[in-house]
Every structure is written in structure tokens, then in C-alpha cells.
Length: 368
Ligand code: FAQ
Image (tube, rainbow, N blue to C red; front, side):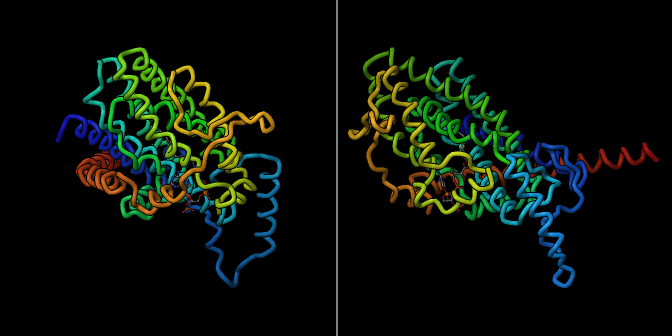
């Protein structure tokens, strides 16, 4: 195992140990919100005969009032089954994206061109593990277990962002991921800080602050290359040519083809539509590309005075659906690496569990 894979594996192991420890201080003790839950109210447990329709209607009305007033739903509050399910789907997919997203850049830690770039990259990759932690914890507050979420990822039942199924072939790709992938992530995640589900919204605030650093370090690395040799400038342009279109796909399918959008927006989970976010991202990126001195690889990219936005060329949605179906350039490799890291961490989880049990029995003895 090379240094990088060892490092990525070690980060994974630490994250897993952290997961496990936080889980073991009480069977239902939740980490992020310090939320000690009695069995979670999934509002599915009401048995047939005893269904109190009036009570449910009353709870639904209270929930609707909070949503209409743009308030926050907290973990202990009643919520419709579908709202809970949508949040678990989105937050767990988001968490998986952060963890799988460590892999393309982690691959370059051992090959960073200087000590400074290496330190920055290590800090960034560790931040992504932290984002995974906040997000898994936020999803846990909805009553889903981390084991179940990870199992869904490892067995291919859960999605993670399409973008992490593309390879990082050159050092410029590391800068490109920071500039464009983190840039797109920020564009999508800033509105999520106002999401109606409190634990998710609060997790997003910190994540967005860290993503800003990630975006800036990527842009800075590319600026340095653009001020270097012609070969370095060519490397940046070649990288941009490969990443541009997959980054635009990160925002999800067009609004007209997005089954979850309408309800997500009604619930205030999604604040800005896929297409509007994509447009905002393009509008913001054109000037950054000009400053950098690179050419965005779209002959149709043109300022539209009437719309006050940039027009852009057609996105290859067939490629997006192929990646989602597991047929992207790196789907198989990413999943295999993730599963191996999880298996390699089994002994850490067992050790952490044994240690937590020992500590708990010591506490009990002292208290007796
Ligand atoms: N990749 O109806 P919609 C990052 C799926 S974090 C894969 O529009 P929705 C940080 C979607 O899940 C990047 N699948 O769905 C970082 C749904 O499938 P389902 C991740 C995608 O939920 C940087 C189906 O298509 N960010 O990069 C994608 O309303 C650098 C229909 O779509 C988040 O997860 C995609 N790109 O909107 C880390 C943000 N797009 O579940 C390391 C939170 C769509 O019905 C290094 N998530 N799908 O089977 C969201 O904002 C939303 O979930 C969207 C999708 C906007 C991603």
C-alpha cells in the first residue's frame, strides 16, 4: 500500500473510530446535536385500529405552519414520513459524496509539488472527512443508523455525487476540483444553510465556510500554474476541458426532469432549483476563467443581454445517466476503495467498541 492510500485509509479509520465512539456512549446517543432520543417518532408506528386521524391532522397542520412561516423543524418534532425520507435520502447521499470525494484528491497527496501544497491538500481532504461526519450525524437525528447508510453506499443502493466518478489525471485536476467542484458545491450548499431541517441547515454553515477555503486554494494553485511555463498552462486548459461539463452536471438534471424538486422546494429543503443554481454558477465562473486566462470549453457560451445571463451549450445528459447507472470512468474503483477502507477499519471499530464498553463499566463501578 502506497503512502497516499495509507493516509487515506488512516483518515478513514479515524473517522470510523470517531463514528463508533460517538455511537457507543449510549445506544441512541446522537453525536452532532447531542440528542438523546427515545425511540424516534417515525409516525409510522401508529397501529391500524388506534390511528388517531384527528391527532395526525393536527400535527400535520402544525408542521405546515412551521414550513409556511419558514421556520425550522427539529429532530424531536413531528414530521411527515415523506419529509423524513427525503431528508435521509439527500443528507446521506451528501455525506457519501464527501467521503467518496476524498478519494480523487487523496490520490495526489504524495505527489503534491511542494510541502505547502501538500499541507493544504491534506487539510482539505481531512475537511471532507469532517463534512461526512457532520452529515452522517445530521442524518442520524432522523432515526437512521450510520451502519445502514454505509451499507447502502457499499452495496451500491445509495448514490453519491456523479463528479467523483471522474479521474484526477494531473496536478491541475487537483486545482480544478477545488476551483470548480468546490465552487459548484458552495453554490448548491449556501442555500441549504436555510433548509427547514435544523440539524442539516446548521451542519451546512460550517461546511460552507470550509468549502470557501477549498475553492480558494484550488484557484490559487491554478493561478500559480498559469503564471508558470507553457506546459503548465496547457495542463490547466486540458484539465478544464475534461472537468467543465461534468461539473455542470453536479447540479442535477434539468428542472423539467427532476422528480424531487417540486416537493423539496415546497418543504423548503431545496431553495433554488437545479437549473437556476447551474446558471448562477456559470455566470459567476466566466469572469474567474478570464482572470485565470483559460477558455471555458463551450463555443455557445455567450452573454445574453435580454436574460442578463450567459447562454450555454447543451449538456450531455446521457453521460450523466450513465455515470449514475455505475458506468462512469471510476465508479467501480471508487466503490471498491471505499469498501476496502471500511473492511480494513473493522478492527478499529471493534477496539473502539471494546474500549467504550470498558469505560462504561468502569463508570458504573465508580458510581455504585
Ligand atoms: N450525482 O430530482 P433530483 C461536494 C440524482 S458535495 C448523483 O433533481 P434532488 C463537496 C438525485 O439524487 C457534492 N446523483 O434530486 C466536495 C435523484 O436520485 P434519487 C454533493 C444525482 O435531490 C467537494 C435523481 O438524480 N452535494 O462536492 C446528481 O432534488 C470536493 C433526480 O434528481 C450534495 O449532495 C448528481 N450530481 O436534487 C467533496 C448537496 N444530481 O435519489 C470533496 C445536497 C441528481 O431520487 C471534494 N444535495 N442526482 O434516486 C442536493 O442539493 C440535491 O440532492 C441535488 C439533487 C441537487 C444533488
